[in-house]
Length: 416
Ligand SMILES: NC(=O)c1ccc[n+]([C@@H]2O[C@H](COP(=O)([O-])OP(=O)(O)OC[C@H]3O[C@@H](n4cnc5c(N)ncnc54)[C@H](OP(=O)(O)O)[C@@H]3O)[C@@H](O)[C@H]2O)c1
Image (cartoon, rainbow, N blue to C red; front, side, top):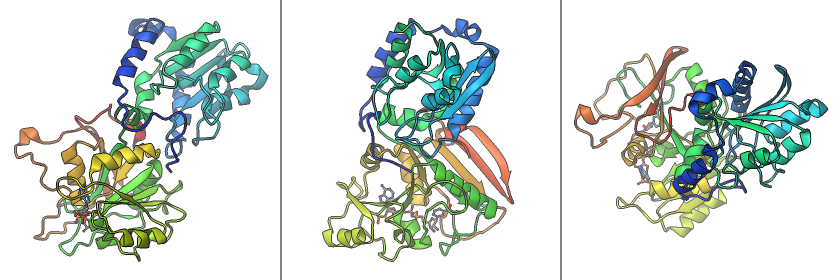
């Protein structure tokens, strides 16, 4: 679940391109070139980096606004300690792995998916822990582009005489932290659009019924997906039609924030998602100035965020997304319906797609596709889904892929 933004976090809306370029120039000289990179790492280090990536994935759904990080302490091919960052405010991966290795870490190698931090956040700097442990060599997956780290960790380790190499399994390390990298680079969350449709591509029946389209396995998958994101967003149309709770009940993991797009505050005070709004935050994003209505919803535990309406009189998505990032919501799951998916695709704010297909032919005359008019009449203008993965989930099919043209690389490390 999202936590309030902490020291490590870049303020929302800050574009880091300039910082990244400066950083690249600063550390490139000391990094191995791609050619030498392949011989700069041992097989044991490569294996340990895969292990560290696996460990880091355990933090999915808990670390933001911090990155997901895994670390392994190695000597002569033997693993002395493993660690991962589970939650913002808790121990960093390096500190945990070093603590497990104890005195045996002296003279050993630390393999870590992301550059160790050199600053005081909610926990002490990892660089200090690495130096105190007597580590001799540090193998790093990728530089941390966060301006408070920004190559400083690498510099400090090198200045202290450690052998530091960067870039082992870098593509996987980047993929692991797509939401973090997207939030830092754009000030907006990494967005997954999720929909469950019938075999004839329908989101709901003519009467608006959509519950039960997916089988129990698909439902569990959907709840796992919720637990992996920092917030789940729906439109008011879905709240009025389905009265969903949007919590995690059929999978392990914490419930994420719930966000409703509701320009005129139509959400009923009796809505199911307000029942546990004290425990699992509900944000109602609105363009309404009805203070009385807002107060009534706040009394039910909701947080009402008011925005200047967009030209259509609706909640402005960009402003909402920036505010969510400022609250540590780096990974956002959009569960529709049609109007909301359409708005995200039209604005270019969606990064990843997850669509379930039920073996049901629903039929009907109302337009019930999971998207509406995208303003792309020609086939040549269709949005392409890259790196498509298809699998069977119980009786249903499950498709995941990257929305081509969206920021970042395909997020295969983030798939459920
Ligand atoms: N099968 C599935 O996976 C699934 C999932 C979800 C929903 N559904 C189905 O989808 C249907 C609901 O879809 P829907 O299209 O009617 O409604 P929706 O997409 O859930 O909500 C759309 C509404 O959100 C509000 N909104 C506020 N700001 C917006 C913005 N910037 N962009 C877009 N919308 C904004 C608008 O109402 P205001 O202007 O009044 O705020 C808009 O009419 C239901 O039948 C539901 O059962 C199916």
